[in-house]
Length: 220
Image 1 (tube, helix red, strand yellow):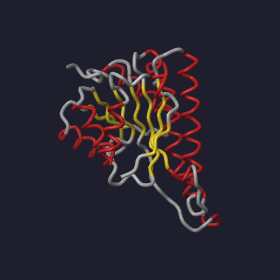
Image 2 (cartoon, rainbow, N blue to C red):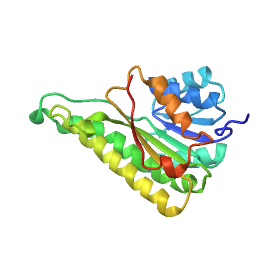
Image 3 (spheres, rainbow, N blue to C red):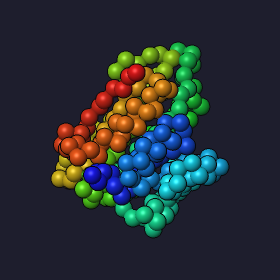
Image 4 (cartoon, rainbow, N blue to C red):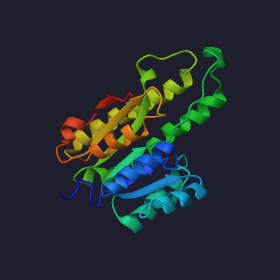
């Protein structure tokens, strides 16, 4: 039976992380055409060798012009995009409220900036797809913030707000698109679970109206 992901084009932002590689492999195995985006060329080269068929693209996702150029390259190589999996992240915290430094915040903020740029540049593709999907990994701390993780959680909360706005945009467009958020306490050890959940976003019985705006907590 043909997979619902067969020949779908999925962009993974932050693809050279452990979770990115696992998700990429699962998508390729399901028949998707995967564009792996990262900032380290050597790691992208390794990923292309390990997963034949994956297209590696180096880009600074916090630079709007660089993201526009990325979109042009993706369109030229594989056409319109059906999915964006945003795995740009990282953790900095500790020190209570007084220890929430501007330096740490600026590093963490890059994830939200990248989400904004990437989802905007591929928005028309996603709305036009018969199964457009955007997914992010957020944190369970959004529901229960801590003083030591204030910067981190603030960025995750902003990202979730952006995803709710994307969900509203999909609804108002009348498209078959869906914006989905996965929350984790920690991603280590959940890479395979995340990959399965991402692939399932394109399952035959995964109606966009049921998925759109969904927040799912993943646990071991």
